[in-house]
Amino acid sequence: MFRNQYDTDVTTWSPAGRLFQVEYAMEAVKQGAAAVGLRSTSHVVLATVNKAASDLSSHQRKVFKIDDHIGVAIAGLTADGRVLSRYLRNECINHAFVYESPLPVSRLVVRLADKAQVCTQRSWKRPFGVGLLVAGLDETGAHLYYNCPSGSYFEYQAFAIGSRSQAAKTFLERRFESFNTYSRDELIKDAIFAIKETLQGDKLTSSICTVAIVGQDEAFHMIDQKVIEEIINSMEIKEDAPADQAPLQEEDKGSEEAPMDI
Amino acid sequence: MALRRDWVYENNGGTCVAIAGSDYCVIAADTRLSVGYSIYTREFSKICNLADKCVLATSGFQGDMKALQKNLAARHLIYQHQHNKQMSCPAMAQLLSNTLYYKRFFPYYTFNILGGLDSDGKGCVFTYDAVGSYERVGYSAQGTGAGLIIPVLDNQLKSPSPLLLPAKDAVTPLSEAEAVDLVKDVFASATERDIYTGDKVEIVVINASGIRQELMELRKD
Image (tube, chains in turn orange, red):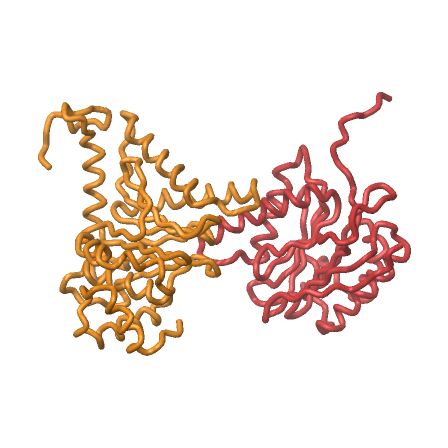
């Protein structure tokens, strides 16, 4: 993307019908560290790469619990993500206070999208620089949504955002058709695999990766680092079994590996 | 004198008691909900688990009790999101006081007792009036049967006055089982003479291993 005379204000259209400031905000999402989400019929898993600003600092928090049944992973400006997480938490608490029931995920993402849209139509505001993968469970089942700074949102079976996410997306595209039949552990494993794809050469260790899960009988929570270690170690043992084999091969791998008692 | 037609409160009766021990806290409330000389229900819980070490028992107007419980539970959820941990009992005690005083000029018609373990694992009981004045004590009773129960607790638990120096521990040296028995006895006694107290008493005990609950039958007349 190059600078042009229509990109100064968010309230200026280009002759081709584009809002460049909004598109630049989406660029901020693409620059952030990767985050992936996968969904089965009963569980949704989020995994992120935790980049640290330097070796001296701690890792950025990219996964936030919003309520017992909803969590988000962010990519882009983490400050914007933190502020939006606070908003989402408030919405869930207020809904539960009035209706004594959890806020359906689809309603939450619409409110978030509307909030993002406001910032694309006010000259004194700027769009949020963060993309959110919203994972949640409600009466209608398991859901994974992607909310972008433009104010639009989509539901996905699996998705990846952030830098080098295309590698993860390619991996997920090959396998997503069978996700609905996956068990909880298989879903976690594939999420970590997808994260591994985005690293492209860098070593995958449990310290740079955060995994969180929400399920029908499981409130949203981060998975313990030790458990992630075990999964990564078992993955390395099977380094020869390439990750790009067809989903049919998945069944063989499942029976060969030691049972994961998470 | 003109007839007042804006009385929005109702007293639903009931009694709450709490006793603090060295490493436990007992909180109890009866389960009768009444109005006037009638009973609405015999199985109504006046106790709310606000946090893993903090329990609220409320007597008075149950509409306000429900609203207050929901308010505190929502505030606790926000606290957990912000601080990544549960609220301690003394922190919840201050929050409850502020919440009650916030409505100083249209009060919650509630008489509360907050019980739990403080950050050192010792039992604590906080007792409130309707507008948030509170004090940490070794034991307390609130509600329609309180007048019958407090003298007995004073006699049995000998809580030293906070005015005495040096400051003495307000918690009772009784064991957990003895404290629960005492609570059962005082409720049985209050039930005899207070028409609003009876049916069942819900007894909640908090200690280091968690929260446990038991129900005891009371006279139903």
